[in-house]
Amino acid sequence: MTQPGSLWVAVAWSEMPGWRTDVLDAAWGAWMRSCQRAVAPWVAVCAEAKTFASAPDADKRAWMEHRLRPYRVESAQGESRGLLTAYFEPVFEASRSRNTGYSVPLYQPPAQLRPGQPWYSRKDIDTLAQPQAALQGRVIAYMADPLDALALQIQGSGRMQIRQSDGSLRQSRLAFAGSNGQPYQSVGKWLSDQGLLADTSWPGIKAWAARNPARVNDLLWSNPRVVFFKEESLPGDDSGPRGAQGVPLTAGRSIAVDPASIPYGTPVWISSSGVQTTLQKLVIAQDTGSAIAGAVRADYFVGTGPAAGDLAGRLKQPLQMWALWPQ
Image (cartoon, rainbow, N blue to C red; front, side, top):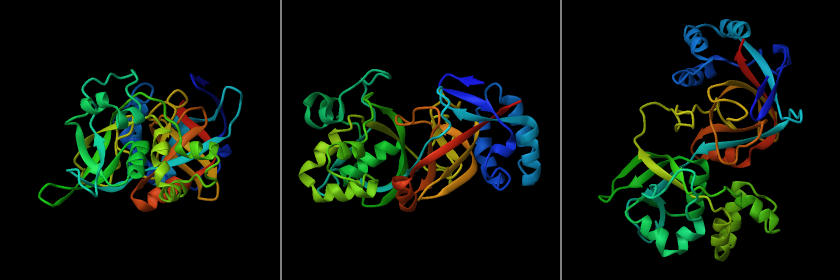
């Protein structure tokens, strides 16, 4: 079985490491969110899956083994090992107005932005009059640290504690609303290529920036991609931001994938072991990202806040994936 960007090889359920030990109930809610947007061939499967929402794990597992078939995801060259990274929803303080403590703007999309057409680069936006004029009146809020603003753009969404004009604090979510169409470039790779830093984890990058304030703009401008946001109120539950499939992400159960390799809404078994964590669990393909490309490639959503951010900044380890598809 093939997808445009990957080769799927049918295997036995027993070939998936840890298949009988995961708590499937924890993934069911995430899957049901994807089922709200089910397309062929998932419509009938999702209708059946909903009836198992309250069933014991043993019944869920037996039904999946009867109704689905596992496929090992490989590249066109037959490579079954890839890369797992992680992402999170950061929480930052911001201000509605520019002041000495908060001077880094977060923008709504400019009116003339056209999907698929490159707009001004990050450096252009920071230094040229034309893009600055186009962004007049488009500021949502101001942040204190340009590296934090970059992290928010890389993650694609985040929660903000925004100080209002009357001094009160309000928490809201900034969701992805578009980009300038420029390619994403890793600031960590730029530092490594320049021979400036060996530890290119996010904590390492921030420490380097603190030591080299005169070169922070060079670091920022090495990534020409800028993300624009829209502000949303927070839901009453603990759901994460909406992924590319259009459903809220679930911490520990949602992944971003290359949709040419794995379609949105697909249940995926992942196996990954490294210094940061060992994972053998069921997750759902619900998101994508500009850096998430290739057959065996996934970005694991780890949740909201500083602890999630610390893990996301350090997790980079080998990965195997199995797509579960209707019989």
